[in-house]
Length: 113
Image (tube, rainbow, N blue to C red; front, top):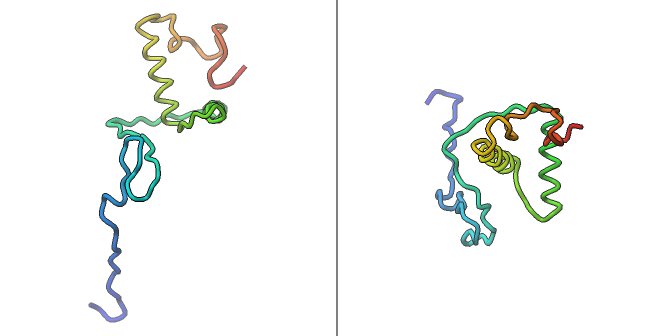
């Protein structure tokens, strides 16, 4: 080694089993914490929201939390997408996903009047 250089420190990590929690609800082993129940997803998309839409999503998440339902924004978005996609074959162009924002067909899900 050249003068003045020190050898990089190797970090000692616990085994992978100690870092990862199970993906099913229930005891997570010795640490006594509840597992989150989150599942891995094979695909990923990025969604860009306006400040109002993001605030609406957060209001919905907090409203559910006030009812005792803990949900993250990703799960809420996936569930909303599943509902919209299930509605599409039933109603086609008259379905929820085909409506323009601000149409007279009901309240805007993002909380806009």
